Image (cartoon, rainbow, N blue to C red; front, side, top):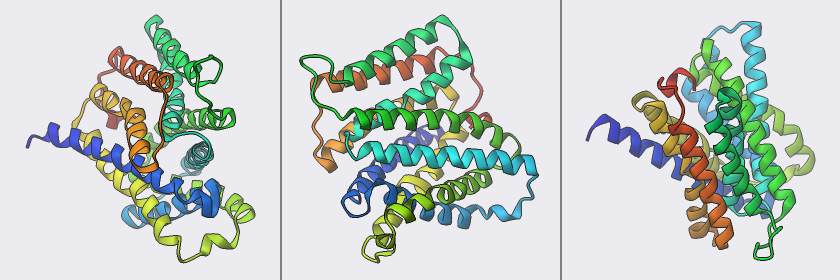
Length: 288
């Protein structure tokens, strides 16, 4: 098996793992809610990544620590808003709406006419999701807004993450960033959920969510980052909303209406188009 094919398979498995972890996390909502689930996901994820990368071995400057702190808060906000959104909207829709964050970052960074076309296509997808047409299915607007906030945090996460990764080892930055995100979310989890967070019956599920949505897919994506060009990696990642819809249908029995499927298709097309029209040909690892 060639390295390229292995890298493609690694990225696809990583995406499936992440969406499966999100489906598993959604099953925790009736017990500890999205805030409690986010607390466990980030907490256990930080422990796992710190055990793997041992970030304390690298000496960091005050400026680097400040950047990583902001990066971690963006990561925590992204996870928290996304899980709150999933409480009331299907997984596929949540992933599609959240994808607007990276698209906005790409458009702002490029400012070429074609990128505004892709942004308009993504915006059309969001409009199709909203219940403003007679044929539109019901969808919780608060959930859509939380997904948009998650996308905004994702955009900040990308921008600050590039700065953090420029001078700090990627594993160190990710481990410390997730630890910061866990500390950022922890007060909300304690205040809103409290003792149920320590329920031994749910801790294995929390660990499973952390592995499926954190350490395992991140490790697989590292393979893709090393062996795939940026545009290939971007196109592969663009199918994630579709995977979210499929996995949500299989594991959560979430049915999507035709307009919602069309909306997800618009977001995927916008993401693929933005990736393919990009002039940057550097490996993703240079900017990830």
